[in-house]
Amino acid sequence: MINLALITTRFVRQGPNKQLLHLIRNLDRTKINPIIITLSPERAPSHEEEFRKEDIEIIRLNLGLIKSLLFARKRIQQIVDSRQIHIVHSFTYATRVEFAIHRLKNVVKLATIRNSPKLSKNDYFGILGFFVYQMQMYFYRNMDKVIGCSESIYNLAELEKLPRVLIPNGIATTDNTSFTNWLKTKSEIRQTLQLPNHSEIFITVSNGLPIKNIEFLINYFKKKKNQTLVIAGNQNQKYKDLSNSSDNILFTGHVNNISQYYTAADFFISASYSEGLPNAVLESLLSGTPCILSKIPMHKEIIEKTGDNIGILFENNNEADLEANIAILKNRINSKTHGICSDFVTNHFSAKKMASSYGKLYESIKSI
Image (cartoon, rainbow, N blue to C red; front, top):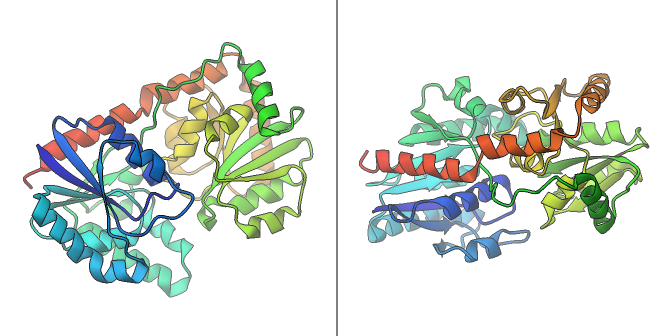
């Protein structure tokens, strides 16, 4: 039996924790005994209730930011020693988790990389961003292996000297929607969600960080009165101010029924500068909603995995190119599109497939 410690900051509603939940639900417990360690106190919005329903031990260190930097490594080392942990795995993109585990002794250290470290530093200002990037790369070099969550991340030049493995993200596909009566369902769901029934609806998801490039989408759609942009996730006041209270820019905040919003929309749209392998795109496609994505490697990787028309790419920050590609995609859509989108995710990006790959990795490296 492999004793595994999966580490995150807290169960905040972000992509990495969704991936962690998918892993826990699909991991082979006959071979792997997992525990979860969280560094910091919980805060809303959170996946905590969902994790509580799983048969897994959760150890909460309840350390704030400064205390986690000072004391987390020692606390985790004590857990490793007392529980005879074979593998510790950072399953988040928080640099302080890698800081906490990179010097642990007598245990295999893993970290899943969820975005380009070079681009992620742009979320910080000036010299701080450079410093954070250098630290992050130092921590990665002290891991026994790092895991790229997409082909695009795995192939980043900045990671090429690291001992890396490719395990693409996956999502739960067992609750797939039937599209037999899809148009009627869309109309009914829009009424339930109080979304306009006589407008083209585009949905995007934001964590509030600049790398998502929400400003470009707001500036574009507030000029398009026959189209509605729905922004789910972090309600950044800056974006609300930028929208200037436009009737066709809607903010939902964090919601528990995001799949309904995906189904209600005509298109998923993202203008991100960088991604890992985005949960939101996969979840939207699973709901049968085609996507319009900025032309970055992580998005290209999804679009080009199939010859069918599940979406289209556009030149970022180019309103004319976005408008032209929206028109192209609209002309491609037919009665089969929604089923093709859904089947694509089921066949290529299932949580079961991801968990199986992680299980094989854990078994192969237990004794590094």
